[in-house]
Image (cartoon, helix red, strand yellow):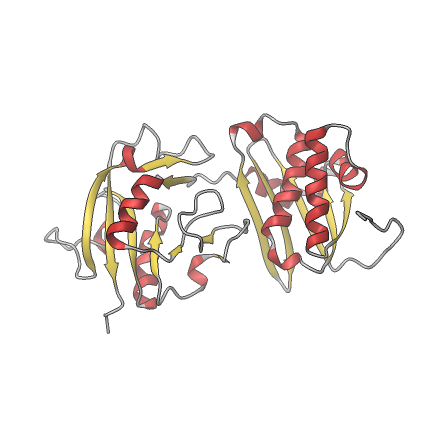
Length: 288
């Protein structure tokens, strides 16, 4: 019971690299010339833990995020020697031991053979860069506001721009690999046949509208009320009326509808944001 082979060896099928900074954790691997990465802004509590804890957490989070690692023999690279050691032999510190146990439990459940190696920091530059690449769009709608929209214009079937910590619908797409995501990069698939809940980063709003049009789909788009924004002409005509694909709309105070995620310096969701929030019920499904 609870056994592990100590002397087995196989040629690794995949190389994964991970790292942790003071702000975030990240990991990546390449397979068939495709770059796969996961990233997470750390919470204030997670930032307060030791660097070794964060490095172990990066390994744990990546194992839970990457679905394609099942049944693989992995060479895992980290620039934290203590983390590489603890995964193999455990730790006398309970909070580190629990992470090591979770890592090994995940490997057993997914038939993953994990070989964690230490590498110098200058050999782990990509993972180091990713871990420091803060997600500045880490904000979300409140649960109460989502409930109102879902009651009036739902039920929503897919949350297109979310992660495992802020998704409002069980089925969601994410920017990076994360636990339980159904797809990375929402624009890589059609949205047809779904009632889409759409709270994208502001700079992506024009692309969201174009993708909805091409997919001939419907959904609810939540954007700040910014008439000077680049996306505004895409939803409002010169006579200040909405285009025909907007079937309904509502205005709300953003401070009652948005909240910050783990990144506390974002504008939307903070007390610094004074603008209204505009929600649009959009339907391209009837367009020829």
